Image 1 (cartoon, rainbow, N blue to C red):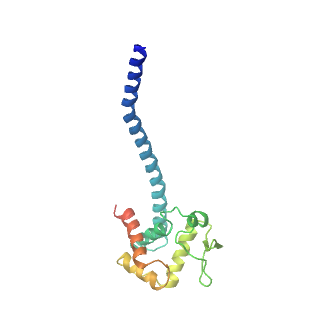
Image 2: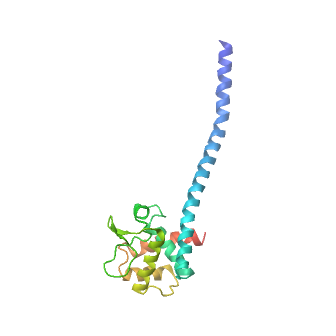
Image 3: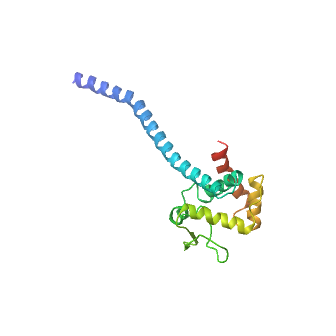
Length: 170
């Protein structure tokens, strides 16, 4: 009986010594998993940014629009983004030229992300947004004046600033 008690103490002591190692291994695994997820998100953000530049929107405007797309899609995770390829929360327009293939769940639906970007460029040109905005605040103010979004201006600007700083000032 004395031998069994001694063995159980060793086993308990061994388990207690292994616990920190298990915790460290778990934390390492979770950190690797998060890094992989961020890489995927960053790949989307970089792709959007480069495609906006290809459409001739300039470096500053392309940065603003990338931040706007991230804000509108919850960092490229929203259902509307995934199901409709809709980066900007656009509605299907009734009058202007568009690349939208129709409406789905109340929002414009696109065949691809590229098509969504092209439609945003068409929208910006049709509404006269292609000025050189010196701040996100000035751009957001212009969007609000033309009723692009319903949220409070301060909230929308804060969301865009968050993603702008995350992607371009980080």
